[in-house]
Image (tube, rainbow, N blue to C red; front, side, top):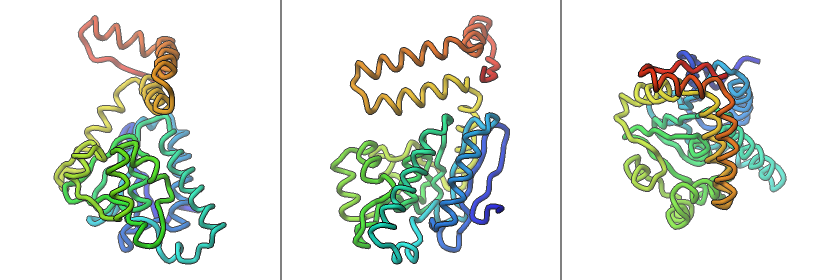
Length: 260
């Protein structure tokens, strides 16, 4: 079936994945999650896509969380299954083997904030609000919020956000390290695309190795992480892009990376 709640557009090696339910602030219902699962799978397999931008339609929201009507119908078994599904989607975003940039154009709450945190980088409009408000519904974050948020901003700040449910604005999100940059709302997509194109021009194998080294190394000791880095360094040395990059530097020209 064609996607009903999202679109995918291409600009060279960059794909823009947009959740398109602006009337409900791009809330995540069951169909939207299904479509996101399929889109992430397709984009992962597409070697011509080197960077993905994830955003939401409209001026108000990136993704404002789950569909509360569907949450209200859950029981303990289906609630746990939904959380496992959300975790799998976020893990798939993290492990695409290519950078994913969240262009946070408005409210990124609950599951929306969790999807943004699963992205490689986060660029926020100056009007954006981010938070984990689940406590106000008698719930807790279920798509990895209690795990990724403290890894990004520290346990104390994460506990304050999750225990009060209070959202923070874009500048505060930047101050505590939750987002990488804050830009004017009108410039958000242009600035995000500029960054995406810059990364897309880099050597794809080296990009994948950096993503894997940082992601996997966070769960290792320093010694094991450095050993993992060394093995990936050797893997990158086996590519033609390694030779192209070093030759281009010596010849004082731009490298032409092919991903091989």
